[in-house]
Structure formats: C-alpha cells, structure tokens
Length: 415
Image (cartoon, rainbow, N blue to C red):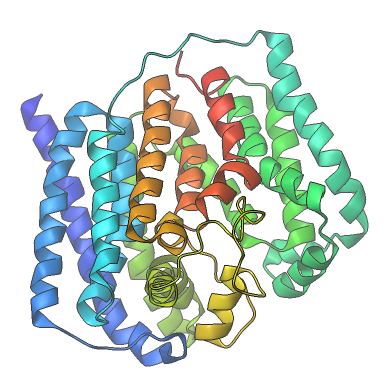
C-alpha cells in the first residue's frame, strides 16, 4: 500500500511538473508574441524565477500529506494548483507582478491542506423518492419556466456549432431581468448538473434528460460557452474513474494532452484560436487580472461598497469594478471578472484575500465531511472554477452555490 501511495503521488507530481514546464514555454513563445494587447510582456527576473521554483516544489510536497488525509481534497488541491498557482508563479517570474498575489494563493493552498481536510460531524439526512422527485425534477422546472417563456423566441441553433456566440450573448444580456438572472445561474451551475448525474447514477433518465434539455436550451439562447462545456465536464468526471486517485491522474493527463494538441492544431490550420483559448483565457488571463486588480485597488479597498454594504459605505466609482478594470486595462467596457483572490483583495486588501480563502476552505471541509459520491465531482469542479473566476459573494448567492451546499447533504452523499 505504501508503494502504491508513493507511486500515485509521484505520477501526479511528475504530471504537474510537465504541465508547469509546458505552460511556461507557451507563455514565453506564444502569449508574449501574440497578446501584447492584453499586457503580457517579458520582464524576467532570476531571483523571482528561483523563488517561484522553490515555492512550486515546496507546495508539491504537501501532496503527500493531503493524500493521506482525504483523496477528495487531494483532487481539489491539484485543480487549484494547476488553474491558479502555476500560472501566477509563471507571471511572477516573467512579469514582475505583486508578490502578495503569490502569498495569498499560497495561504489558500495551505488552508485547503490543513483546514479542508478536517471532517465535521454532520447530521444524517436523506430524501425519500417523493422528495427527491420534487427537488430534482419539479424545482428545476419551476425555475426553468420563466426562463423558457422569456427566451423561447431567441433560440439560435447556430450556437450548437459555436457560431453567432457573441451576438446571441448580447441579445440575452440585453433582455436579462433580475429574477431570471438568478434562476438562470441556479439552473446551469447546480440543479441541472446534479439532475443529470443523479439520472445516470440511479437510472432515472427522465431527470437526466430534463437537466440536459435545460442546459442546451439555455446555451442556445444565451451563447455562454461555459454552459455548453459544463455538460461535458460533468459527464467526463462521471466517467473518468471509480476513485479520486484515477480521476486525478486522468484529468491531469487530459490537461497535458490539450496543452500539447492545441498548438499543433493551430499550426496545421494556420490559426491561433485554440491555443489562445486554452493558454490565454483559461490559464494566464485570470492570473493577469489578479495583477490588475491588485494594482488598481492597492490604496483604495472597496469594503463591499459595491455590494451588500452599499447603503453604509459610499462606492467611489460610477461603474461596476469589473467594468472599471476592463476599461482601464483593456480599453473595453467588458466585465473583467475574476476570482476570490482578486475579490478579497479588492474589498479588504491582503486580509480580505486570506479571509476569503479561509471561508472557501471551510466550505470544502463541509463537502469533504459529507463523503460526496465520486460521480458528482464534476459539479464540485464547476464550483471550484466558479470561485476561481467570480466574486465570493456572487458565487455563494447569485450563482447558487448555497443551493449546492444544501443539496450536497441531501443528494450527493456516497451512501
């Protein structure tokens, strides 16, 4: 058993090292030469480079401890390591970004290691067949009905071929109302994905088809690619393997294959689309946005004045923070949203980033204590990507993560 554990950790560590090297090469050869518009530049520093490599291997060593405590948190740690820690370390070496970004992400990883692995004693709650039907079939339909009738005339079948994405999205955003926006996120982030996996797991295919139909409909009327790819994410994690060890190795292998294949596809078809999506948008743009948020809000934290404390603290700007960042650094009025690291720092400085990370680690500890069925990990994966790309309170309230917290103890348990 000891040999097996060591072998699994060594394989995962080796894959993380290879992914890190490839992303670094792609940053130097592709991002810098093709995306100067976005602010990607070379400012190499040997001292920072060595510091980044030392930190990389130090946090890699924590895999052994996490593996011994929780295989579920082990996979969560690896995902955050790949999506957040590695890209920010690379920018730290090559762009002279703020050291405080690395410190906050490092502390967040430590919280995941030592806080999220704690198991709480939770009450044993289960649903009977009638309650399950109401929660996973009737409730989604009730939330979906307002969305369906509002956008039934806006269906664009071309979006299924990834065409007319931005025009469809513009129409959807223009017509989006306050209550429908909440129902929209609750459906696509939580309820429909859970219904799909529950249907596959328990052979209740009506649940699965209902969830699948809702997600496809919403994608055709909204043009949000995240909805479309979420379907593949939850199905892939459902089929990926019977244990978290297998899921961890396979997801890293697939990430490695995608990083290798996308540049080759672009080379064959003389395009830059696929590599730009994978390298720039998924990995390095969120890391760059951390830098911009830290730079802009360094001397003037918002203290949630744009959010729940707006009635008590005056908000100093005329537009949403994400729009301000887009206009300031990209010369666009697009929403430059980013995750809990930027959000915490924007509101309360370094302390905010640390506190936000601690709160997320507690939520992960809650999921860890439930013993979530491995087949539902795709839903948890969507949650992780949500907190890495959206404001903390937005993730919990507007995006429906509170629903995930409730439904997880009712439906997602392994037994």
